[in-house]
Length: 281
Picture 1 (cartoon, one colour):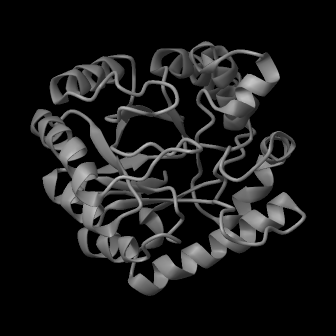
Picture 2 (cartoon, rainbow, N blue to C red; picture 1 turned 90 degrees about the vertical axis):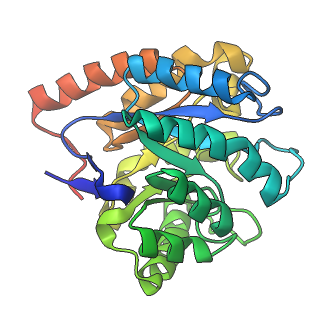
């Protein structure tokens, strides 16, 4: 049984069944739910709801990553997320992730009780995040992003090049292999055709040797396929979660926890029945 090793002595089983990470945006401007959970009490209430719906992880983010979003300072980010992380840590019921690309914020979040650092920059923004993970034992999610670099023509080759470079940074900082999960970065510096190709060929990424988390929730790629706005993309998201589970993904970062938990329960049953689970990293 594979375990993802996390801070504060926690771990998560990541091979026999899918796990859901509930998105908690403590932001005024996120593309789907910005402004809904800015107050700490509202954010904690939302986290409790997602936990009751089956979320194994709550991912707390204080800065929007939507296209065109204005950057905020580290101080602003920390003021938004740290009270929420502390409150969730006191409850002790759920694994807490912090969505940040800043090492300073990551360190403070882990000290406040977070177990995972979810870095959307793939260690390309602040490589010191790797040292934070090494020193604290936090789980580290490394995401592929094509920003500020020349992409290879083949999307899988590009994933391998970028993620192997990030894994080397993590290893050099002392992060253990069993602390690391990878994310192919659906929707980040990728057009619609690239997102579909990446989804269709997802299983080709498994030889990288790490569990994979995926995040398609309510993204533009879903809207392009269904014609729906962000609030109407949950069914499309669940369809991608089901498909990607069958291709070997193990962690799913979503807004609508209940719908995706159900879709993934069906996928897990299909994998168990067929005996052909593809997440053999």
